[in-house]
Amino acid sequence: MTLLWQSFTLLLAIPLFTMALEPSNPASLCDRFVGDDEVQACEKKTHDSKVDWYAATVCNLQSDQASFWNCWSEIENARFSPAALDKCAENQSLDDVSRLACVKAAKAGRQPASVNNTEFQSLQIKKK
Image (cartoon, rainbow, N blue to C red; front, side):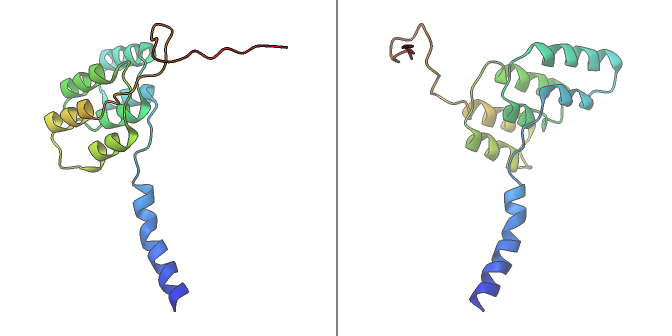
């Protein structure tokens, strides 16, 4: 009976696992635009931009095109906490302003090591 209950619980949990935020290729987001000029402008901008694919998925949830581009400018060259972005996407009742605020709050504070940052020791490989 316990095994049956565990199997039943696992089957109910499967939809919860599939609701996780999926990354979207930024170029695929141009499908939201109707006019050829808008699509071409979007393709050019998404081709040249460096954005987090999970954050791009959240921006694609914006209903208004202007809100989408505001969100896009917020995610360019930024790093995000995937768990925080997941919260922005899972709440379907958020309006565009609230979702943008959520994206801003999801920015990760830790930046990767760089040459200009003396806080991190650079990796040096010595060949023998």
